[in-house]
Image (cartoon, rainbow, N blue to C red; front, side, top):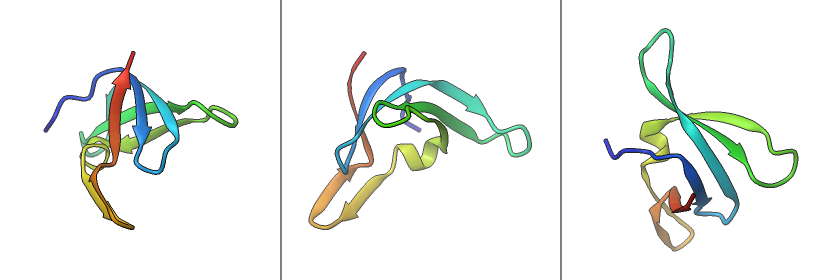
Length: 71
């Protein structure tokens, strides 16, 4: 699986997020991405790393769900 580094990412729909790091699910040992929205209420979220790194094909777009844009 591709490494997920801390920093800013852009979701394929346009919003930006800050990855704070990764964590392990206590029951399944699955790697989760811990991130914060850089808009609105700046909520804190987790998402499975496999989903973070997946390729999306939707509405004419084909590419990564999240693209790294810097620190």
